[in-house]
Amino acid sequence: MTDPVLSFRAVPGPGFVAGCTVSTWLHAGALAEPVAYVLIGHAPPRRAHETAESVEAGLMGMCEGMLLRPAAERVPMVGARLVMRGPYVALDYGHPEFFMRLPAPGAEWRKHVAAGGQVCLTIGLDPIPPGAGPDAVEAYLARVTATGRAYMGATAIRNP
Image: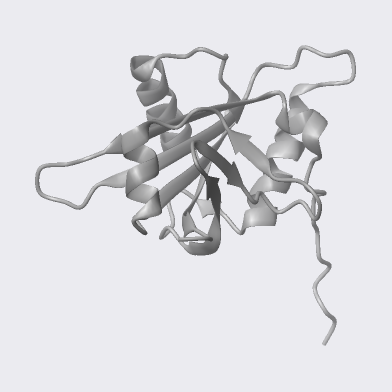
């Protein structure tokens, strides 16, 4: 029997990550435990060397580096990938040298995560412009989930 050919995409470096769009929020449902969310996407290609294909390959490298699965599947636990130092939060996105800093998660989000609360991490493959508000993020999530263009995993704080 022959071993299957492994395919893997490189986990992108900080230059790619700097072009990512990141949203964080805390959903506190009336009947369920609160869940913190992180949504990572990428702005439409804007640099000379970027194409839709190269951006998607970078996002898929992040998905593979963090062991995220398609949103239609059961959300896997992908290990403790968040590091918090005061108001600063960084995500171990699978790169051997670099972390991704999450821009200004709110105080309630940080409190939930610091107490050991779960975080749902989602990467959307379709472009999302910087500055998208809550309604645009909700519509984006619905679209990428329905079209199989979202990958998810559950994570938590590494240093409680």
